[in-house]
Length: 351
Ligand SMILES: NC(=O)c1ccc[n+]([C@@H]2O[C@H](COP(=O)([O-])OP(=O)(O)OC[C@H]3O[C@@H](n4cnc5c(N)ncnc54)[C@H](O)[C@@H]3O)[C@@H](O)[C@H]2O)c1
Image (cartoon, rainbow, N blue to C red; front, top):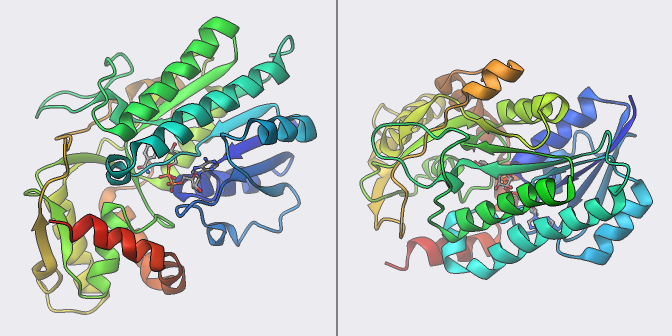
């Protein structure tokens, strides 16, 4: 079946894996990647598919209503997979309004244009909104986030994502816009911008620089390999029920400090350093404001209803990830540009 899909944020970390999967797996689909190419967007993530006949890149901002209108007019999309967002919690603490603009206003703009274009012929259309488990707030030592967990966002990032989720559901209930949502746990894998924990640690260990760990490293996150997230999005896009939310997670909880020690061990092996060398770089820094203690996802619904489950064990995925960063030095050097250096200075040297 032929389809024309708009994927937003396709030059980013997760978006690039989703674009690659759809372009390669569905040669009959026309995939249009709309991305503003902020600091986090990088077309080098897509060099391997950029010349495929069923792929088009459009540079543009999701808050630009006239541009979105024009793209819907030009391509007559029948599906949207919406990933474009400001995505880094620390940056949201520095500049919350940028998050409200892109994540809330940008999502509402896309919803509104889709509603107008699909009005009266919604059959076969789908607006898929990609969201995060952070909307559910923070867990204590026990329990898991289910699809019924009430929203309790606690950072400007998670508040903006929660707000965008509410708009998606409101458009479903009010206008019968065909939507589906997913809320996923922390992703890791290749092409991850090195401001986030795992690529930042790999980058610093490689260059024998201090590895910053917030507080005592007690925060717990549930990690999922990014290609497994892309597979889940594929499954939900094709088989998810309209109006539903699906939680996506790896059933894979790690305390930050334990994860960093595992990473140090893998890096020592890969770089042929004496055991314990990389761990000496671990440096505890002042905790993030309002740092959520624990996130953990119950992905049972996605597993039992749609048959999805993660494909990789964490150690295996982390080894693959480290191997990718070590083999792609140019990618890493290119993204750790001047702007990145400034951000890094501001974030970690202000204490
Ligand atoms: N990274 C995770 O662990 C994780 C987990 C769960 C959900 N998510 C969600 O998945 C999505 C993608 O996350 P990511 O980690 O790949 O983010 P990312 O920051 O790597 O990529 C975001 C992309 O969106 C683009 N973008 C930003 N603002 C834009 C705008 N105004 N208009 C058009 N494009 C814009 C950027 O250029 C970039 O390519 C986000 O919606 C995020 O909330 C991420």
